[in-house]
Amino acid sequence: MAAPSTPPPAPKSVFDLTLDDWIGWADYHGHPKFRAKQIVQWLYEKRVSSFDEMTNLSQDLRARLADAFEFTLLPHVRVTGSTDTTQKFLFRLHDGRLIETVRIPANANFHGDRSNRITLCVSSQVGCAYDCKFCASGLAGFTRNLTVAEIVGQVLSVEKESGEPIRNIVFMGMGEPLANLTNLTKALEILNSDWGINIGARHMTVSTSGLAPQIEKLAKIPMQVRLAISLHGATDEVRNQIMPVNQRYNLNRLFEAIQTWQDHKKQMITFEYILIEGINDSLEQAEVLAKRAKSLHAKVNLIPYNTVEGLPWKRPDEAQQEAFVNFLTNAGISATLRREKGHDIEAACGQLRLQEETAEGIIERSTPEVKRSISNSR
Ligand code: SAH
Image 1 (cartoon, rainbow, N blue to C red):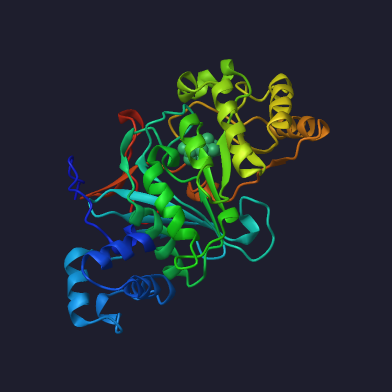
Image 2: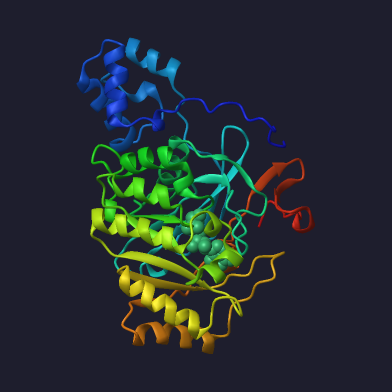
């Protein structure tokens, strides 16, 4: 069934609330504070899936909860890949929209960390409004922000499906997380709190195309989450060509925001830098990038461009990739060349596209010329 064009408002889910919200809710209904703690314990520690299982709450309170809240995990429509490789989950939202989440096991994770850790690449919006010229996610434009429950729900559903805890989160799925800052901030609190999912703040990375004012807001939140900037160009000239957001917040403005981040968080940030042949892969760009990275205390994560059907860009050959990374390393910058997993199942960065369920199965929504049918089994 095609998704309706005006989506119904999201029903309030139990996974939308922080502990403080629960305390407020309990208080409003004449219940003591400890009831709120019991509720979050059932939700996040015991992971029950119905109000009936919350046996230390009165029938009356359970009925009131059932009246006020939805209690469903995100259903997945399709899982691609196996548990010991990169896996892509396609979830269906209440309004029929589809989003993707990518689960990356330890040997393939983004930080080169070899301990037994699983990283989840989470989506923050349906579609994306920022129109980066190289990325599949924005090809069909922006549909809507994800709710808190839809962000948190990606983690809960994948943990339930795989039976293993997620240790790292990267907000590098579909969407611009900082354009959904209110919901992102609440979701981060639920993910990080010891009453919630209990993932270390330093193990959560928010990636942005460069929304300077929102970077400054997130800098002031008392949580040591990490920041990744999708830079992809070391000069305004190059960046303007491939990232329209740069016309709103140019590099000077972006660097000012990063400075505010550093002042508050006192931590290294990451510059994500896709290498695109003939666009940003020259050693002149590497030289400017090295200067920027040094002055802003940033490490650089180089990503050879992943091809996107319908887009003209290519990755440079390996010799050019090596020359670029070596230039940075020789300039004293901590730089890595990401050898990415998931390319074959289109689960790699920038390959997550807007999809839709129709009578014929799941189709990719993008510009009309590249719209094409894909089978349910892929
Ligand atoms: N909007 C946020 C979050 C998305 S993260 C941001 O821009 O950071 C997705 C990452 O994949 C970003 O670093 C993005 O620039 C990168 N990316 C997009 N298209 C890509 C492609 N085709 N190949 C490799 N990386 C890509």
